[in-house]
Amino acid sequence: MARVALVTGGSRGIGAAISKALKAAGYAVAANYAGNDDAANAFKAETGIPVYKWNVADYEECKAGAAQVEADLGPIDIVVANAGITRDAPFHKMTPEQWRQVIDTNLTGVFNTVHPVWPGMRERKFGRVVVISSVNGQKGQFAQVNYAATKAGDIGIVRSLAQEGARAGITANAVCPGYIATEMVMAVPEKVRESIIAQIPAGRLGEPEEIARCVAFLVSDDAGFINGSTISANGAQFFG
Ligand code: CAA
Image (cartoon, rainbow, N blue to C red; front, side, top):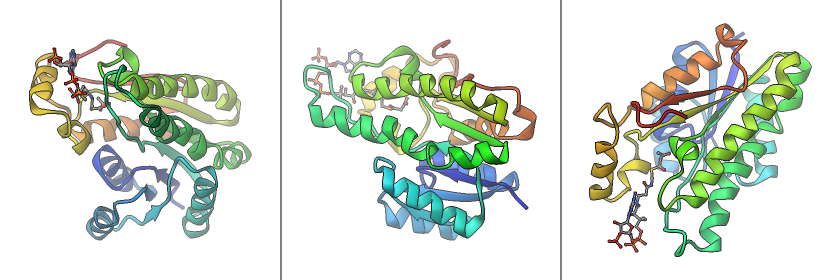
């Protein structure tokens, strides 16, 4: 039986590329999404990957969602915590609401996603957790005090989970994408985006598939001794 992989935020952007790469590698993939029904339905029609709607910021929804995936596809052995949002603003303008939304989705969302499936991984003595962090969690970023805090937090999460899961055959790793050609990066004002690209030695944005290939390796049986690590894929923008 194919291993079951849950990808949050799995119907758009980097998450969609991860869902497709894991399906191509032979996993039974479930793609979670939060709200964009049209994009999720188009993704499902294109890929045949089932989509599940819930809000990663809500623990009970995550628990129920994971239970539904397990009822449909089988026990979740692989979880890719990818769902994330930005609410960029210089710190002096950042509102408590912008802080809270990003923390709830990007950081608490990782807890909410992994916690319900962790006991099953421990029981079955196998698990793969991959959290999608960011270069901006490694280096910080103007106007991203909230986002950078969550992405740095991801690294603390996987380093801790790695120590707890290692003896149970569970690995937990982070991938830190640089600037990737997705809607999130395209939402940055063009002038700012151009100045960012100028700071990337590769001279270009990354492609979602370049991140998906990192994830496909980390969840494979071959990567069993890679635990608590961080893979940076950023075109040499930063060495974290
Ligand atoms: N470094 C230094 N200064 C910067 C800057 C940067 N990266 N970005 C903006 N500024 C400066 C502007 O030049 C401007 O300076 P002046 O006042 O001297 O003209 C000032 O900061 C902006 O002030 P504003 O009051 O106009 O700012 P604003 O309230 O309109 O906010 C912004 C604008 C939201 C900061 C906008 O510039 C922006 O979106 N910047 C990009 C932030 C960013 O890189 N986000 C990453 C998103 S992609 C992502 O997060 C994915 C990933 O993981 C990599």
